[in-house]
Amino acid sequence: MPHEIVKKACSVNPMNLEGGGIIRWLITHRDGAPNFSMRLIDVPSGKSTPDHSHDYEHEMFFIEGKGEAEIEGRKYRIEEDSFIFIPPNFRHVVRAESDMKIVCIVPIKAAVEILGP
Picture 1 (tube, rainbow, N blue to C red):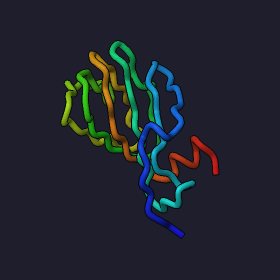
Picture 2 (spheres, one colour):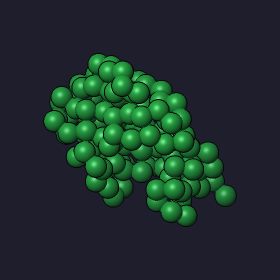
Picture 3 (cartoon, one colour):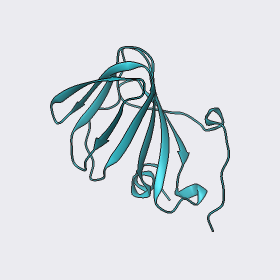
Picture 4 (cartoon, rainbow, N blue to C red):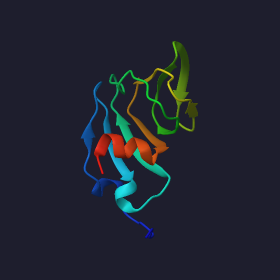
């Protein structure tokens, strides 16, 4: 049964990403969330998220930092207060020019695939 969750992001174990970023899965199916997972991604200056694609959409909100998002070969300037939508199967990567902090929302399916049941 779903229940409320109130935590601090620093209490969630970080996982390293290819490219040099760090991800924390803040809310997932393991917490009882039925539809969406929330992730916090830190990308240090000069590093990136993995250059990849997957069969689900996701949304990203940039809390801090500056850099570039490349989606299907198109490059976009990103800075604090920017947000992006990435459709399923679109190749994408985020490159940081200064330390970035990103909130990323994905379907529960992503968390199950990556974290397991």
